[in-house]
Amino acid sequence: MEKHPQAFGRSWVRVHAPRAYRFIQKNIRLEDGGIDWDRITRRLDHKSQRLWTGSLRKTVKRAYRNKEEVDTVLNRYHDKLYTFLAPVDRNDEHFRDIISISLVRIAQKGNMSARQEIIKLLTFTVDEWIDHYPTLSCWRGYDPLIQTRLECCVRRYRYSGSFMLYLYKTFEYAARGLRPLIAYSLDAVHNN
Image (tube, rainbow, N blue to C red; front, side, top):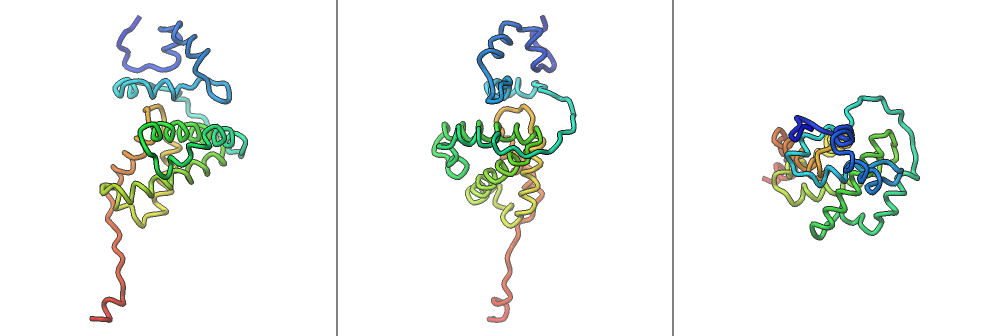
C-alpha cells in the first residue's frame, strides 16, 4: 500500500483503506444520501487537502430549479443564517462554512435556486469584509465585478477545505490588481 500518494481521493480511500471507506459510507452522509466528502476534507491538514482530487470529471450540468433542495439546507441551519452577516465566534464561522459548502454543492449540480441563494448570502459576507478588512476595501464600488467573482468561486470550488477561506483568499488576491474607486464631486470644484 502506498503510504504517501501524490494525490488521493474517494477511489483511493476505497481501494487502500476499505475499513475507513465503509465507516465513511455508513456514518458521514449528506441530506440526499450521498457521502459528505466535504466534511472529510475539512478535517484534513492543509497539505493533505491540496492532494485531494475529489471528482475531476467534467460533465455539463443541466440547469434546473428546485427550491426544495435549497430549503432542506436553509431549514436545517435556519438559526445559523445570521453567520453570513455577523459571525460571533469560530463556531459561527464553522457553521457558515458548512452552510455555504452545502449550497455550493447543490448549485454545482445545476440548481439555479441554490446558486441565487448562496450568492445572496455571500454578498452580505463580502460586503462586511470590504467594510472591515483594509486588504479588501478597494472592492468598494465594484458591485458587478463582485457578483461575477462570487459566481466564479461557486462554480470553481473543489475540495480545498474551507469554502469561506477560499472565497476570502480569492478576493484578497484579486484585490491586488484593483484600483480603489474615488468619488469626486463637481460641487467641491465650484465652491472654490
